[in-house]
Length: 197
Image: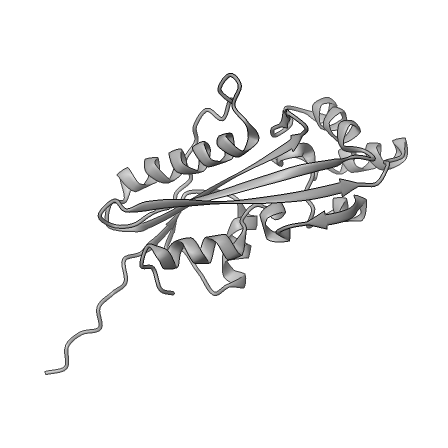
């Protein structure tokens, strides 16, 4: 009698981001389940962008792992930092315009953390840091971008894979990290925990 092939524990993505699903598909990974985790993303007093991204990614992965203890759970978080100022997801059009005005003609950092928990509780996290420089935006460019709505739900009020790609004069680091999921770090993290696609 031929033994049945052992089924790999399923992969759960603890994020509702369609961009993260698309990025995983690029490297041949298709989560069996998407189960987003919502939590308070307010930075702690004095928390750096690096620590915030890692803390949130780990918290999301841990929360989803409690719901799915027999699965590999993957979570991520992206933080945009201009100096020590953290630019979260904008509240409205005025907030988006304010953030884009701050980024105009300047360089900023995008920190994307990815965290994973394996069946049995082993866990890990990786961080990608990318430096992005924007051209000086004209008032017409800024207004048109805000009116287009692409900023909604995006850290720093922009999506590099969309129209804002035309604002980028220089990018040093992980492009996929800026989109929201650093693929090198993601694959390495899952492989290190024993997940083989």
